Amino acid sequence: MSQGQVENEQCSILIGDWLVAGLQKVKSEETRKRVLGAAVDLMEEGGLDAVQIRSVAERAGYSVGSVYKHYADIDALIIAVNSITLERIHQVMRNATEGLETPIDRLKALAHAYSEFSRENPKLWKGLFDHHLPESRSIPEEHKLANVALLSLIGGELKALDPSMGEDELAARTRTCFGAVHGLVTISLEERFAGLSGDTLSSELDFLVQRLAEA
Image (cartoon, rainbow, N blue to C red; front, side):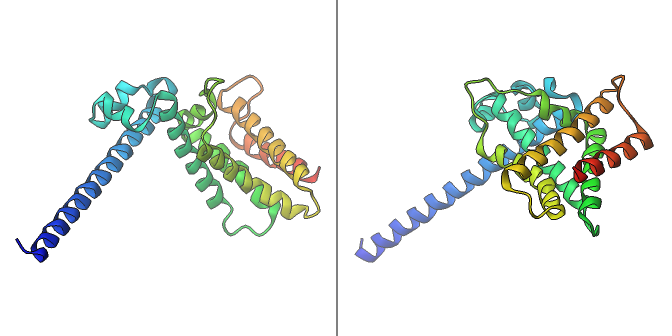
């Protein structure tokens, strides 16, 4: 075999290996997406308790081992589901502000969008706050960033209302606004004695946001 033939054969082998590796990567990513999609579906249908490794594997059509190949444990899988939920909330809230001219109107729209998402997706929304990692585990960076992105929607409008607000004050005010709206939404969604509903909830969300923005 000539030197040229040897080089061509080696090149063919390398290309073949590259193609196989590429196909394996695509297949692995497809498996990961199907597993995560199955977990999201189960959370939507049955809440946090419905998301178990075996039930996710069955829904996705894979073995339990395939699930563990992509997610180290149930906590890692639930965090991935909750990250998807955060992304959806972020998108809904951002869309709600389109076309609105004033920061206060956009803040009110953010609050209403958050409330509406919780009512339309109660199990996904509840899963965000019912899941707790063991104290020895740290929250993944990408999940932290998803939370920051959500709060930034509020912080940006508060900064527009008061450009003189310092970084620390803005961070505190942003958390206060989110916490207040979240609290009202929570007691209303869970139908506690102090909860509100319908037009009353809507008007009180406007009242709450207005007062917080004026503080």
